[in-house]
Each structure stands twice: as structure tokens, then as C-alpha cells.
Length: 110
Image (cartoon, rainbow, N blue to C red):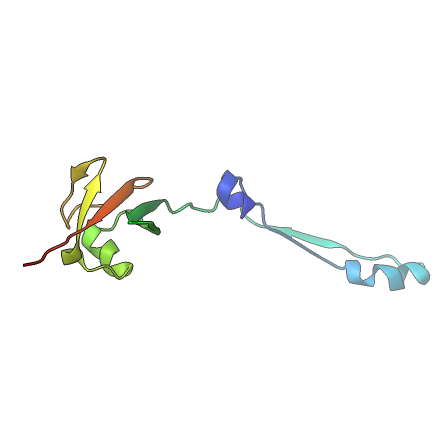
């Protein structure tokens, strides 16, 4: 989790042979230690989009459409109006990383 949040490079390593060290030390035998080092890599942070409806917050992946995001969090698209920065957005809008979408519940009656 620390590497994910900090963006630190991860260097995978494995070692073996040390499990025989105690036994070999008592009998004064040499212990072979082995180390294998892999390729360094970084974890990719998948940026999220925050969707707010009333007092509930939902997080979805960026890059999906508003319609897909609403379906993913089980909100009927016909029941809400979506805004980004105070501007109305359409269901086919692509959600961008780090942004906040506010939903307003549609009320109708007769």
C-alpha cells in the first residue's frame, strides 16, 4: 500500500539457503546463500472519480462514461441529473481522473 500511494519503485528479491545456517554452523559447515533479484517496477495507480448523491460518495474508475458509472453503482440514470463543476453533463461524457461529479435527484409528481 505504501508503494502504491508513494509511487516508489519496487525491487523484487528472493533469498534461500539461510534455513540451513543454524544446522551448518553447529557442525562448522559452510552454508550457501542464494539471492535472486527481479526487474524493478512501479504499481500503476488507477485514478478514481468521485460521484456524490445526497450524503453518499461513490468511487469509480476514470475513463468510463457517466452512464457506465451510474450503472456500476446501481443508480438509475433517469433518476438523476449530473453536474461537473456546476455544469450539466451528458450520459456519454467520459469521466476524467480526480474529478468530482455531483448528482441531483430528479423529483417529479403530478
